[in-house]
View 1 (tube, rainbow, N blue to C red):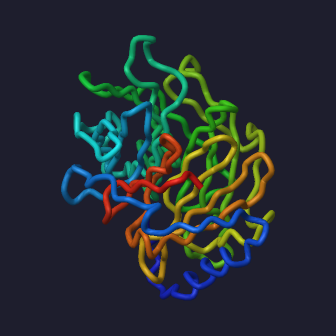
View 2 (view 1 turned 135 degrees about the vertical axis):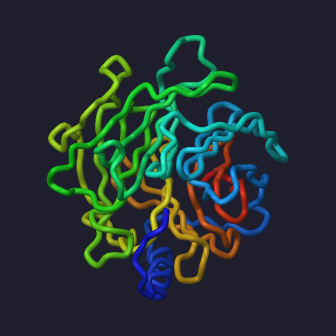
Length: 306
């Protein structure tokens, strides 16, 4: 996910690195070239940037801008491409920035649970903003859009980018993103927590801020999480949210934040720019590793899981 602001924000990279150094209450983990490996190149559609990604068992689903999906089978030393198709929500205004497999299946016999896809675009999709597309995908059948979830954000709590990720353990749908814009002065990173809507609630579900189980800005709790930087995807695992940021440049380095959701505490700030000089996109735990989809280095395996 890229910002459209054209100013020079070199100082922000320095601040981000300093945040890691100041994070004295965080765990100290040193990663080197032995911990980070390029697992495979991506085989998506040319000229469409890689965006959301999610993993179910040994299957990795990679999304690209507009909603192009490629399914791979993960191996210890690589990936096998199995199928490529357009999502049912494929559209020029679908940035497909984050992907999360859910808990429900459309039918009990389906290969995959439902896939939740963040539209994450300035432009509206059929009049709706901040949409979460719920898709039924398969290795053989055509995809189907089975539910659309939208936040009725009349108070403008989120700015450019509202994204959605699932907390499986607590059966929550988490909306997170900027209150203004990636690099805007005064920007904050907001988290809103909702009960995960059931498929039985209908084809279009509207969430309201007053429905939120919790609603806070990270910087109001811990200012070490830098508020002015380019956000990407995220995932939740065992009560922690893994939040990659940056585009793999000196101005906007590749940084991974680990946020403890239950304790509302920043646990780690990992600057991985030297090891992964590529644009972070989306991530997912897998067999004790963190799998990171990038633009520039394909799929990267980070071991051990931070």
